[in-house]
Amino acid sequence: MSDRLSLTIESSAALPSDIGLLASIAQDFASSPEMGATLANAIHQIMTYMEAEAASIFLLDESGEKLTCVACAGPVKIDGLTLAAGQGIVGRTVSEHCLQRVRDVAADRDFSGAVDQLTGFCTRSILCAPLHIKGRMLGALEVINKASGDHLFGEADAQLLLALAGMVSLAVHNARMAEALVEQERMRRELDLAREIQRGLLPTPPDAGFPVCGVNLPALEVSGDFYDFFMLPDGRIAWGLGDVSGKGMNAALLMTKTIALFRCLGKNEHDPARLLAVLNDEIAETARFGMFVTMIAGVFDPASGELVWANAGHQPPLWRGADGGYRELEAAGVALGVLSGMAYDAQRLNLADGRLFVFTDGATEGHDEHGAMLGLPGLQTLLERHAGLPPEALLAAVTAALARPGVRLHDDLTLLAIGR
Amino acid sequence: MNIEIREQAPFSVVTLGGDVDMHSSRQVRQQLLDCLARKQPLLVDLAAVTYMDSSGVASLVESFQVARKQGSEFALASVARPVMAVLKLARLDTVFPIYTSVEERLARVD
Image (cartoon, rainbow over all chains, first blue to last red; front, top):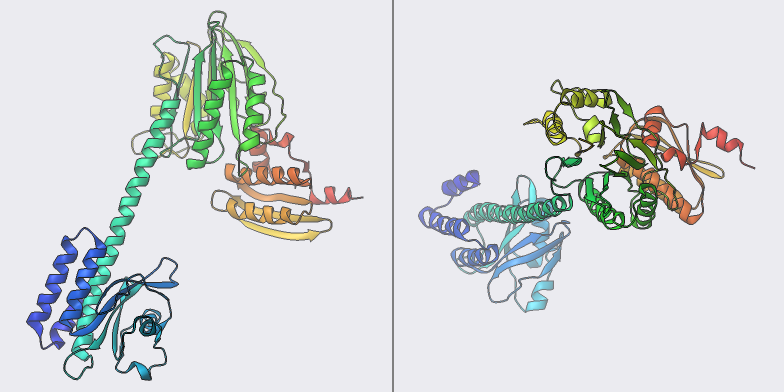
């Protein structure tokens, strides 16, 4: 814009008052919070100063196919009037990306008399400047019928209109950026809210000494992973951990559904294999886009150490025996939501003094401090390094090792530990 | 990622190659669903796939579900090792019909 402004200064005879108009409009643009009113005010100033009978600002819509009048001044109101992007002199300004000066519209075959017919206004001459920013067309600024002198727009008018068009372009661009920021901020608040609601679905941390604990760190604002546990009336503890395929909001929504179903149905169905079969049918009925959930559900009896679980396509949990040895527990059925009518097998073991670790691939696909992917051996090493800690502190140490400050998680990270 | 579709009566054979990930799976999904919309049996050749993430797996699951619903055939052929590992983990190898090669399935056509 500064180039054009200096051009105006060099070529315009009426320099001090041109600067006065530019300064006044710039001040308006800078101070007004509302775009529509500012443009309306500016177009009146432009019309009056340039001694035109009418003036208007047209903006392109998002598709670039339509031009709509967003501000006008003069005897007829054409706010809201829409033209096809190539129509008339305004359209030609936009399609050719350059200023148009038409001294006699009757002699210009691109002139469309449609607006005059509609309004009764009589257009004789037009000066129209493109509105653009960084090569992107925004629309056009036009003045119609010079009311003074020889009734024709001259070179000085053209230079001044270009300078004004530069300012209007910047103002429109800034207003749109501000709108986008507001929208972005709204989306961010929505995501924060969704994240809070999701966190609320996870179990509250139990008292120290409780034999089940878990941790969930989303890679994005919301998580496609989940874990849950709750007491059954007979003193046993129902627990579950799952991972929804994909990332982002769609995974988070299916996660929300799955954890809600698990908690609701799990209170009555204490057989993990049958529970997974019911969850599978529910999810298969409604899941879209081929989304599925891998999940392990189980019941732990802290009195006897008896553990029962079933696996729907989730990666094998790791059992650390009392002797310090680790074993992958591989048996599993099909992931939830793929095909209804699936059956799952219940697995059993006595945990005795051991621990069971259930986790999502965010744990095995996490990276160590040298940037290498952990894999199952790496996770096992990490678990063993902190094996002397109580389970809550152990999970905290493992997540701290994977989600180090400055390291961006590639996937949601969820771990569940069963046994003290 | 590259994708090739050929007609080998009575099948549409879709051959995928390269990485089927978040960026390419949308296209894979659309192509598979377009083939299914023609109600032809569909074979997906996965020999040249080097990587498949869960969005890629989801496009296979969705196609499998659509085919099942409309009563048409959907099968995988020549599943490359990295893809098989992903399918096995979710035990999808037990629900998808899988052939060692496209030819194996074609040889069974009556």
